[in-house]
Image 1 (spheres, rainbow, N blue to C red):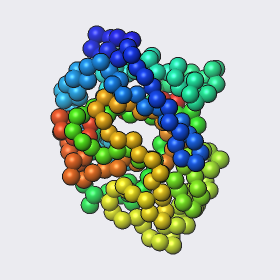
Image 2 (cartoon, rainbow, N blue to C red):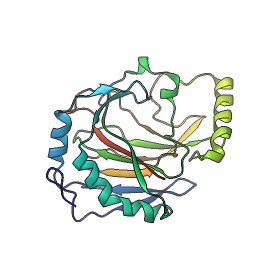
Image 3 (cartoon, rainbow, N blue to C red):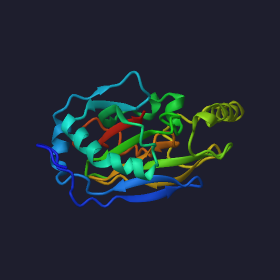
Length: 236
């Protein structure tokens, strides 16, 4: 599909990989838009601000409506198919923003120093589009060692929180740094490299984290920072 400003690549070749022991599908689509320059320029002209209602360690700016419409119109049939979403449920966009990491490690709160999940809703999905050409940190997916969980469903949620708190009570708070590798609490079992114009889609209840490279990723500039376009959707 094409719009005035953003043309989706007409020869998309989505790849499905299956993550971890739970074999959760993750979609990877390289060369997603025909010309990434227009989207980068839109970001460079946008006003980025911190979001004090969320734990994201950086800045956000609104996504262009044309880009969101083109992306969702093109990809929503894949979500129904790959994730077997019931046909009676309808797509509902939730959060739509450009993002840049700019928070230094000495300012992180404890929850920002652990892998996280977005929601326990099984029909909530993250669309993550990497935009800049420079090398930046990958997106990592984690297994919680005490429980073995990779996805946190509503049924697992309380057990996961209880087990995680028990581990912290025994071993102390995580180090005040970005979580980028395996330890006794979480195992990093898969990562998707940041590559310009690569879009990935995954369920929001997967445990995940940006594998922040502190030398390249903590940067408020949309020209050189770890710029992403983020779309979060539910099916209700």
